[in-house]
Image 1 (tube, rainbow, N blue to C red):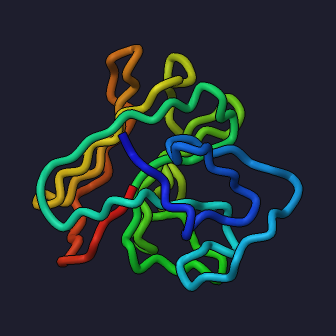
Image 2: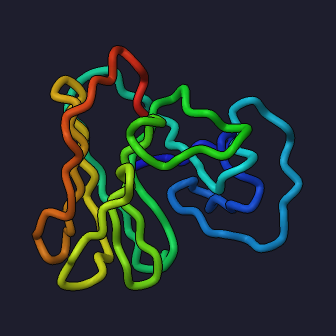
Image 3: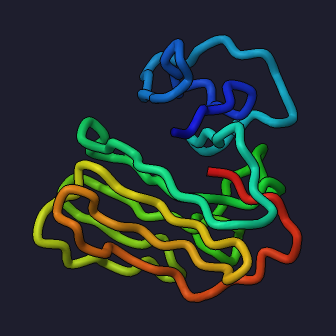
Length: 156
């Protein structure tokens, strides 16, 4: 169960009161300027940060026809546009309408039998592994090649 960090939320992203879900708002919200806040890309990070161990959580994306979920390095650039790929410190999958892709460089189109509604994200820090699974259909979606997190804090 990931708690979203309001200090990092882009001004067009509205968090629920319990900080467990997020939605896009077309009207730009007044948000205090913060060095933690994403200004260029509509992103938000989880409050937790990992430097060891195995962790997993499930994200309900049933209402998110256009979204991406995954993990990133805490040091990710927040004030300028980023490239969504492991080279920039992002390991994520994206749902864009009825197309799904892994945000590799270049993106990898995922040939899934149906659009996932619940995605399990699995992080094994020591192995440098980030994997995604379709919870309802019990099938793997994508596993990124092993990465070296090199002591960096990794956040949902």
